[in-house]
Length: 157
Image (cartoon, rainbow, N blue to C red; front, side, top):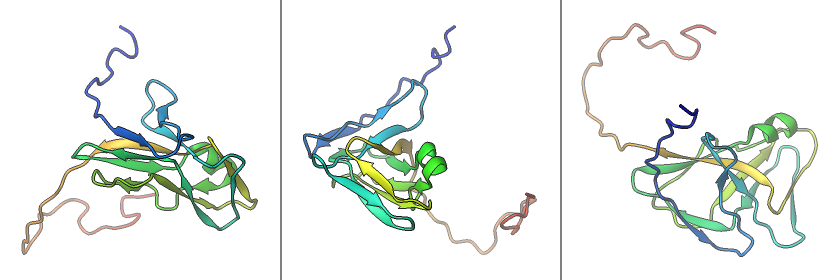
């Protein structure tokens, strides 16, 4: 049996609309990758510089329509974060199924040197995930658990 014979074949369909002729469709870099890379969509010769401590919004040049019950989670690329200190400040960012505007990635430079973004650079990754709408039920007591009200660090370090 091959290592990929157990792949899930029920894949949600995400509709993609290019807003720029330079837009690049998100794509998985490997067969088992959870996230697909998102590419900066800049005008010919344009660059965006992220100064240390600054936040910029990088256009991707496309819009999407997600199926109901799904969200797109925008996450940092580990290489940018560990090599340059460039990450997504609201990670994971959520794109809702009813959003139809241009996809944009917020980047923050936590490093010490300016970081330059050029057209086609992979700036973040996107994971398509199911979600549920919850209903709240008002109660006077909650059931007991072993953890109880133990908060940050209560289960050890």
